[in-house]
Image (tube, rainbow over all chains, first blue to last red; front, top):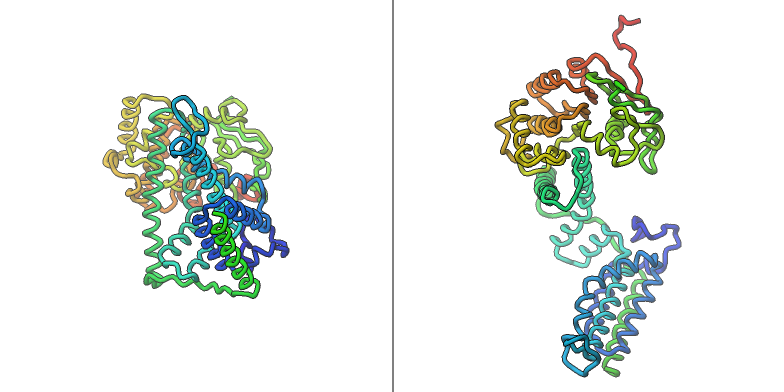
Length: 257
Length: 225
């Protein structure tokens, strides 16, 4: 099995990094437990080790640097305002002030802690779960006994997101053919609104057609996912090793925190 | 100067795919009606998209209305004067109601809302579609969608009409309506159609697209030898 065979940025030359050969289920569970553990950590020693672990995983997965950085930056973009606000809103020892606003060291440490936690978790997810092909991920989640509805929702999204994208592109082309040039005016906003509304209505109608077609083939609310996974020795080793690291992380945090 | 559209030696290939058009020469004069047929995927729709600048040729020149057209800005004017009716009406109709969809193109031409509504009424009555005025576009029948998408383009008063398989999935009655409407229009038009009867009702001139070239087909009648 090659879990990332259709993933674009993984070279499929038979020399896949060891990390990508692991059972997807082991990778999902490991990253989930890692996230839970990292959230529970408080001390900077343990957090630094966690961040180092995730960086190591990232290198092992041989992800392209620039693209990965961009993804991480996107995530950081979501929390950046909170990080800048924290020093000014947390009470504690005086650090510096801008006008009437006083920043505190406690707030700064809090912000740093959150940054390290968030980045460690995201990097691990990118390395372990982000490298699993979307379809394989769906199958793996199904085998991990996740609620069927969620798995189906995910698999259908994967299947139809491109259809939606194409529908959007066709509509935009047709709009262009009728001389539409986007600008900062009411006509543009209304037209874009119509476009999105129509996409929504069409998706709804398409989903009904798909369901009807499925019913015609005897669908009774159950989908059959046929993929089998095999837990190899390297998976057992990886699971054990991950568990060990998590315990060490917690112990270090107890000791220094 | 009397050529509305003049394509010279057009070559085109989609990225990473075999070439679709291999040196097309094509011209359309005012009032002329030309039908094109050819196998699926031969590049007929692509040819239309090149005429209005939605695809840019890899080589060759597009002349429209007496000028060579290269940049997006050039084609903005071309799209005002060439009306393209898409193969799938669903690609074209995206506003909540028929009236709004017809008004969309007219508003893009810079008319005020009141003037646009006048054009909408006028177009609807010319095509006898007044009863569809406030219907939701996605609830129309296939035939109604086709006629409305034609109305949307006609409302912009183009000099040239490009119709991409207009008889697709139309019943006979609607097809007759379409023939009536098209024959009454003064515009020059190019029609892609696989329906020989429909083609003959509109025009005598027809071309076939084969291997990326437009050719005048040999008469298929057995007495023609």
